[in-house]
Amino acid sequence: SQQGEEDPQALSIQEGENATMNCSYKTSINNLQWYRQNSGRGLVHLILIRSNEREKHSGRLRVTLDTSKKSSSLLITASRAADTASYFCATDEHRGSTLGRLYFGRGTQLTVWP
Amino acid sequence: SQTIHQWPATLVQPVGSPLSLECTVEGTSNPNLYWYRQAAGRGLQLLFYSVGIGQISSEVPQNLSASRPQDRQFILSSKKLLLSDSGFYLCAWAGTGNQPQHFGDGTRLSIL
Image 1 (cartoon, chains in turn brown, cyan):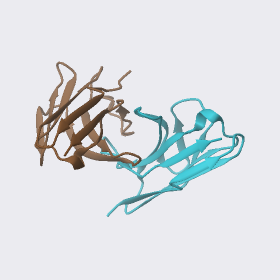
Image 2: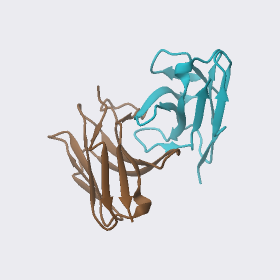
Image 3: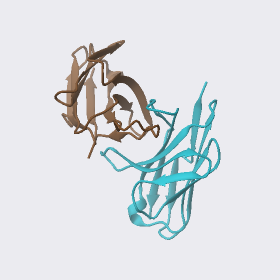
C-alpha cells in the first residue's frame, strides 16, 4: 500500500534538544505532509513538501524529502514541552487525482520533558 | 476564515443502537470532505470521502454509511452499532487537489 510509516514509534527527549522523526513510503507521490495531533484532538497540518522539493522550513520545523529513497524526515529544533504530541506523515497518490486522498502512518509519539 | 465543527465530542452508545455524527464546514465552498477512524495508538483509517453533494465513496466495507445532504455538511451514520465500531472519529475538509486537510476535534465513540 502507499501508507507512510514513521520511525521511531516513540521518542522521549529533554527540552532544548532536537527531535528527528522519519517517514518511509512505498510508491510515487505528488507531495508529503506532516501533521501533529495532541492527545484526544484532531490533527493539525504542519508542513507540505512537494515531490520536486528537497527541503522545507517553517519556524523550528525542517522537513526533508528524498524521493529516491522514498523517505522524509521531520526535525524539530530546540524542542519545548508544548511540542509533546503525536506526529504523522501522510502521502498522496501520484495519479493526477483531485480527490486528495491521503495515506497516514501510525505516527511517532514525541514526549518532551521540561 | 474556514472552520470545521464536529459533534458530539464524546458519545457512549449501546450495541445495536443507531448512530449519527455530524460535521459542518464554514468559510469555504465545495470542499472535499472525509471521515476517518483512529484506533488507540494507531494511524488514521479513511472511511468515506466526498467531492460533492450526494457523492460518497467508501474505502472499506463496514457497518457505517455516510451522507452529504448539503455542500458543507457530512454525516456519518449506522443503523446498528457493533462493539468494533468503537474509536475516535475524525472529520476533515480540504480544497480540491492535493491540498492540506483540516480536521475537526473528533468524536470519541464508546460502544457498551
